[in-house]
Length: 269
Length: 125
Image 1 (cartoon, rainbow over the protein chains, first blue to last red):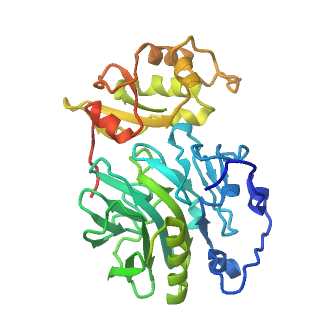
Image 2 (cartoon, rainbow over the protein chains, first blue to last red):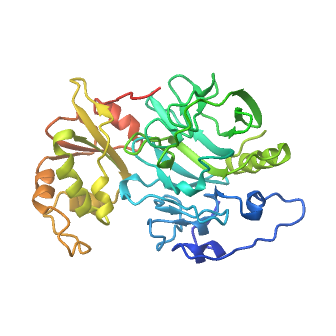
Image 3 (tube, rainbow over the protein chains, first blue to last red):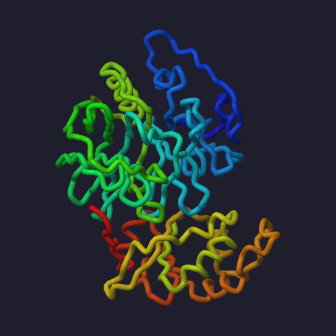
């Protein structure tokens, strides 16, 4: 567990105000880093709440998060794409929390959510998304892990029905699974292959289902982490990390991302 | 402590003015947004929940002053004062009322809202 002392330096802090630049991270051979998914300029985003140097209490990124229990107004994107997540409204900021060797953002299920830059998402091409999260006992209605404006949810769960859905576009036909929601940490994944039309949905390293592309490809406008439509209710539980990649990952990469996020959430795949 | 607040539709504008006074900037004018909760009578509420300090709760119940950041008179202080006059603050859950800004403490925001007699309005599936 972190001591709450001095914040370790990370180059990410140099880009807190939106400064342009480049940060190359050398990773030991054999050690996977989601950074590798963005090599060559692939757009997307990578959020890692366990990296305290990427968290700020305010949306401007001026006051760092230094201890468990503090609100998070800005979470830096570690992909190098600058698609940071922010929440300008103070009451809607999730809480940075530590416990049992893990770190996460705790969303209250009422109004907490973070806005992700639209540039993180491909609205015309392939898309792969993962979120590691834990679902608390909640209000029994619709709970959005990641969503967009109106019905254009990129990634949705519904506690009441226990269904997990991946809806990349407005009014899309969703992929539906049953009995995938419980109160244990889970690594969710979704991918949309635009060329074949397949939408796939994964939970803890296992593909649950796949279906064909919906006809309507109108895209959502605003995308939230921990929330659905702006002003709507939020995820009631923890988010340990998220990776958004604007292409389809290989089976090997998919496995590595899921293993990485499983480690962040304490999930055994 | 965590404070969970239920704001009826009629008080949203004023409550958002109060949120700016007690918050950090103009963005807090959007604290109370969607009317996603309802009481047994069908009255709709926008709700917010956040961890607060004793200083916050004291300030919320004391004389209001225009925040230092508001050099352009962005905040409608009359509205903020109306919202404060309608504020019901309780250390235990009390029933939300359609003419009050009801704020209750409780570690679990959703449990607090349930104890306040509110259920979520289901919009989509």
